[in-house]
Image (cartoon, rainbow, N blue to C red; front, side, top):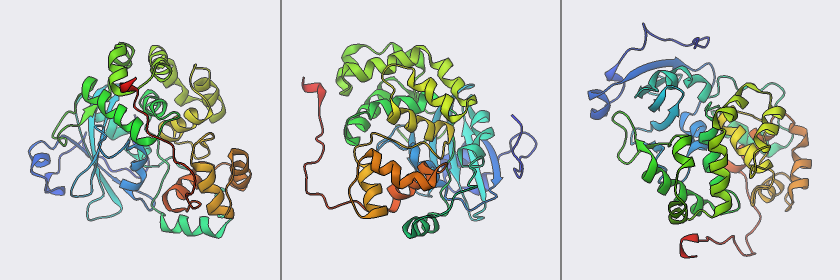
Length: 331
């Protein structure tokens, strides 16, 4: 892969242990890439969209503020550590495992290098305030469709805690240990072949009922075709994803936001989002139709706006019942 403009890469990839004081990283520096970001960038904020709960085995933040992520890349498993160091404009990526080179090649894309903000303008004062407060937020692309699909399916129609518990159990049970000096307990997302072969009793132990399990298994069987959606435009990618049984508008949007960096993918069908958007922009509760009406002036950037609102917006007072945590393991 050709390096992006403005990227500084040494002869191949070079190690620079002085960048970090972490003894484990110094002892096994892996491959290293330094990238001078050409825009304001908050690395943890931008990458946090990939974090699936506090105990996510595929995502960690260390004491130095660096983000660790694992991925099953086209070249094999890899671990990536991303930090911004003392020179705030320079991002340092370190990677280990067979997928290390791929992770470093795609580092700028993961951090929003291809995020085009043209046409984005604040139509509400609160959006302008949030854009200023989170000016380091970018919409990045992971380039891994199936890895974005599995946790999105696990989050269908359940509370986050229930979905994160399932994700954690399945990765700890079936994922391989992260390459390199990753924080303890980190795992690489299993291959589609492995997901397709998880027995029914382990889906049950994870708290995942048959509908979500079948959706993931079906997707695993056509995972290569799903990855091809990265080469399609947003509308066609949406059609391809939604042609899969069990993948609707909400799940498709969640996948495209993370894997493809689609700044306009709205999570229609979300349990909380319409009310948060409605309250932040118009001080009223609303449904999906009302949310889309409020977001219409931001066409092309509707996900960007909802992400800002999720980070710093406000919701209506909570007076009704909350969505309950279910536990299918007891059924």
